[in-house]
Image 1 (cartoon, rainbow, N blue to C red):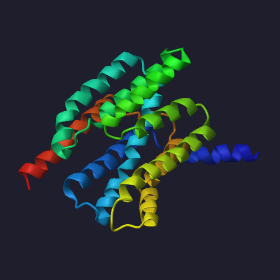
Image 2 (image 1 turned 180 degrees about the vertical axis):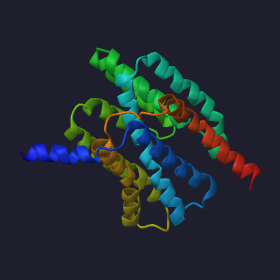
Image 3 (image 1 turned 90 degrees about the vertical axis):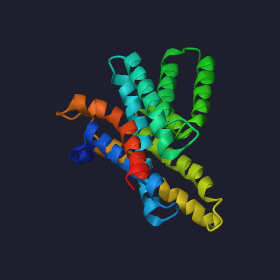
Image 4 (image 1 turned 60 degrees about the vertical axis):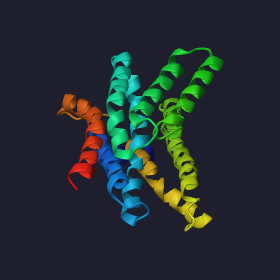
Length: 250
């Protein structure tokens, strides 16, 4: 009886479909990128907007794993990722002037990791290929982390409890990773750097709650084709708009 009540209670909050969650992820990504382009580093508003954006990458890693499993053509999926990654590179460089490759390249390599995990039967060879692909992401946005999240989700997607553990691990991993960015700030003590790192990782836990407890496993009933292409086009499009506003309209 208790299990039935828990399932009924949980089903009542599973009100978000895949497209709604992706639109939320687009918004948080925009806030992160807006903070990098327009806001002064280290201010409270800048750090809030930046941290909110961390919801996006781990959410997209989850949907990459899900999409890999359900897509009709893995080849077309990979080609779409690669084409939009190439298209996005110039807007990415213009907006941020970073030396690395954009997030769509990261997701493309994460996709290749999923291919290697599925297709390469020899475990030694599979491990070598996966490790090499993880290392390649060092030259991309969200280095290492997105690849690790993808592997976690791919291995644990069939177990709700293991997925909860995966998100907790992702929180700890990202806290450690981001703390290293704060710890070298002279104005912060070690304790303050760790606190900043942990706070910045909270959106990863929010992603886990949304995905594991609020996601109903469905797509939107309306505008499916529009949403599919919007999610690809939004990435280079909003980067270009941010750059244009910064350089020609301010």
